[in-house]
Structures are given as C-alpha cells and as structure tokens.
Length: 424
Image (cartoon, rainbow, N blue to C red; front, side):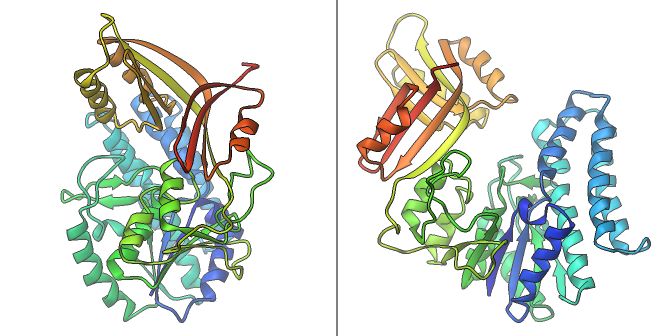
C-alpha cells in the first residue's frame, strides 16, 4: 500500500486534473491512499474570504463568487453534465461557508478560518474523485475528518495520534477491499465536537505522512512541479541541482529551516517507521525524483540553500537597563507561544534578545504591541533569512556580497544569515 500526495499546483486547472488522472491510471492495480490539496491558489482566495468576513468587508460576497466561478469553470471544462451530482456537492460546500458568515464573528479568527478555508480541500477532492470515476478509474471519496482527529487548536491543530490511528486502521482496509484507490483531503482534520480544524499552512504533506505511519505504507510519494528536492529554490538561485537522495536527518533540518518542498512535520512519522519518501514531478511521472530515507549521507553533498523573504528582525531589551535573563525570556517566549508565532532564528546577549520571524500582518502588530508594554523594542523589516546546510566559507562570502548582514549564526553544518539589501 502506498500513499500519494498531490499539491495545489498539480490540480490548478482542468488540464492538471486530467494529468493526475493519467498518473493514477498507471497505479490502478495498487492499493493507494491519495491525499489532495485545494486547487491552485484557492487557499489564498479563501483566506481573503475569512479576512473580509472578520473585517465586514462589503466585497465579501464578491470574493465567494470568484471562488464559485473558479471551481464551476473547471467542472465545465471537465465535461460534467448540467445535472451531475458533483454540482450539488460543490454547492453544499458554499452553503457551509454561508452558514459561517451569516452571523457576526464570535468564536475567533482561527475558528472561522478553519471552517471556511477547509472547503477548498473538500471541493478539490470532490472534483477529482468525480472525474476519476467518470473516466473509469474507480475510487472512493473519504472525508478525512471522519478519521483524522485533532484537538481544537484552530489553524495549528494537534493530532490525536492514538484515536486517529485506531480510526484509520479500522476504516481504510475495509474501503480497500472494495476499491484500490481511496481519495481524501490534506491539511484538515476534525474535533470530537465535529468542528473542522487545519494542521497549519501547506499541511497536506503532513496528512499523507499520518496515513503512511498509521497504515505502515510501503512508500509515500509527494508529486510536485519540480523534478525532486533541489539544493536551492530556482526562484532565488540559478545554480540549484537535484538531490538524488536525502537522509532523514538532513530532510528534517531543511524543512525545519523553511525548505518548502516538504512540510516540516512530515519526516518524523516516516522516519519512526522507516517509511521511504519520494519527491517526484507530476510533469515527468516516470522519472525517479528524489528519495528521502535512512541514508548515511545526502547525495550529492552540496550546499543547500533555504531562502525566507519578508522577514522581520526584532531586538528586545529591558526598559530599566537590566539584563535579559530567565524571567524576561519566560515572558517573551510566552507571548510568542500565545500568538502562535514561530521563531526562525534567535540570539541572546546580556542586554538584548533578537528574533527573526515571518512578517505576518495578522499576528506581528499584536506581538509588537504586547512586547512594548514590557520591553524596549526595535525592529527591521523587508529582510531575507538565508539558511545554508553543508556550507563552505566561500558560500557565506558569496551570499553576503552586496548585502548588509544584520545577524549571523554558524554551527558545524548550518549557517544562517539575516540580510538586508544595501539599496533599501
């Protein structure tokens, strides 16, 4: 049994859905669990709906209509009849959104975010499942919320592993007795109160890893628009090379520091059961891609770069010129934890504590406001955080050329630099 994951780029339009169908037709004799994300940029579009709802934006219904038009245009291009049940299934997803927004927001941004944004995955999988069945690739659609149970930490839900494993092990084998292909959603889960949760942005990889772990999968394959794991994001580097194999340890380090090809929480469940992961291209499905597994070393062993733009460097010091000691750090980390803000880099000195974080427009203003109540706060915007795994000294020199280095850290294997363009 294998677990496949297709991201938003692989189902961004009608032609992409047809391509997924062609790939799955190559594996129709194998037992698969196929995890699929929302289509294209629909998560972003649904986030606009949530923001508009909470801000009482008069364009709210316009945003919803754009999402409806997008999905039904794909349905039309895939040739579904006017009376096909899929159309009613999709309309029901929009009814779910309308139920959320018909009353003023009262349960917090995270709650309404998860109820609304999750509809992207539900609509995407309904369309793909219906298209596969219409074209002779039998499959069963599974609502992942029935088996993947979480707590109610909205937007960053924690998986109830014991219950989820029990539910997955009881449901999936029975479904596989009837159909080789089970198609379900990534990114989302359900609570004991039957509310929807999300696992964190780009969390569909993590969903696939959960299924792989619970089912002792033979292999997990992530289908991407790149030929495998690259040594650098080609948007920022023209010298990137494909890695043939990546050790679990390197994969964990790379994803922790922000490599976007795999979700950070994906690797550990696979490593715990020695389940191999492959990253393959949906554009060239017969190519091998990159293997992630229990290797001694990554091959080829070249510097790997992770670029994180739109960073904010915050320097925190005491108002009374005392040291930043344990009590101060306890308060600072408490604020970051309460606001669910991940620290990408931190550095401490006697009188200041510096952190580099994503400049999230929804979270950072509140963080700065709270910090200023207790500390002196300075910050720099529009920065780039570059992490280099397996670096050389010459690598650092090349990276910092023409840039101002605001913060730098090095260990034996990893270097991190917070850079500012000298022209800004």
